[in-house]
Length: 74
Image 1 (cartoon, rainbow, N blue to C red):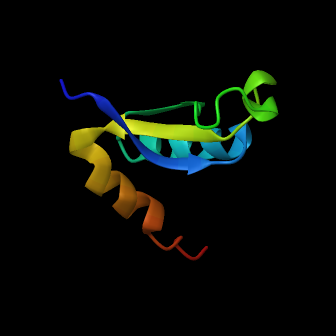
Image 2: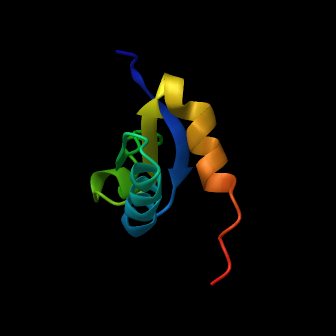
């Protein structure tokens, strides 16, 4: 199976969980993790954001399409 790749980066864990939930609802396997960008900085050592959204490389285009879709009117 393909390796996971970083689809996007968000600032909070709540936002990361929301994005992953949206992707999973669309049938796209995804996960989030604390980014290692800026390792050694206060934010990294405190365990807070930014967060990377991960998907398999084969799903990148579909994931971007899902996330860019307009919400359906209620």
